[in-house]
Image (cartoon, rainbow, N blue to C red; front, side, top):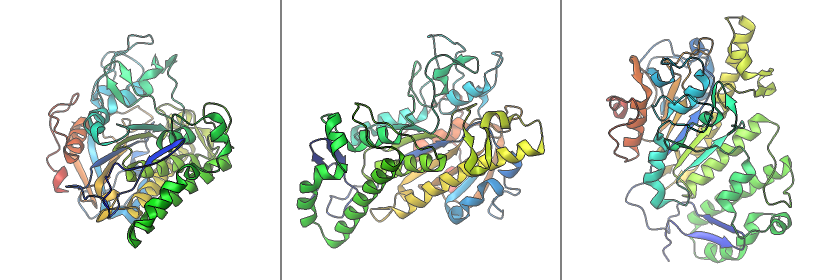
Length: 422
């Protein structure tokens, strides 16, 4: 028996893909994937930037949780989101930071309906991947991004980093249960069925049993690990809140750590099942009001970032910065541990962690906090590029790594020549 990579496990109210199994026809090459993790509102840059370039450096405080992935991580300095600067438009650095990050385009300043920005690099990738996946892309977040009203003197829609067209932002989803139902549910699932089932796996039990009988030992183990991961996520979501009988899923964890890790775990499953090859994840929104008691910071994030060099506030921002990176390190752990063909998911996925504000106290869009990990990138280095090198150049390079030939993106001036030689 041979299975297609697009084989689905289906049942009444469930439909989801399988991980890459030995029994499947081997693809010509492992599918390239891209993950963008956006960590907003700036960093305490001395705690982010290694003191030396090249390979002989120590990971600073904020990046310390990445030590076990050091050989896969490369820190990039000198990149800039030049289109996040005012350029005559006055205030609004947080709104511009989000909307220009993946587009390289200065957003049209408005609080009305006449929004205009540019196509983001993730949506260029999504368009390329669309023929081979169930979902061209997923957009995730841990903090609600309002889509109406005024945010930082711009329309709130500019809080999106993902743009399908100049006038169509892609709002991120923050509810893990909604994401789960999108990946593993089915449009035919009624509210009563959702409330009655103990697991989405119940709906595919007979088909799973038939498939398992024809699999070898290695494939059986991989299928079992995949289904176990799905069930574990369901169990964790059930602890947040029971499945409702309403049409829409409900329940967001009160713990930021659990919220972020649920969304990261769902991202791993989305990649491993071939549901999508492009994900953007905003850990919070620009200028957001999220608090981080788990990191020892009960105050709102944004208010702390205007620290005016107050040591207490600087310390609180540093704690939030490190806490965010810890969640990303968890994601890298899961990606490295998940087998995909002859390697791991991390081997076939290039990830970017960064944002378009450096020093939050001055809303600096230069020398952005940026690192890449996974995929074909050789890690263990700190590279410093020329001042004000457009971050769009990095995005062009990431697209090229994924086999997507793009010559122009926003204010980009060309690919980063050294990236493939790291």
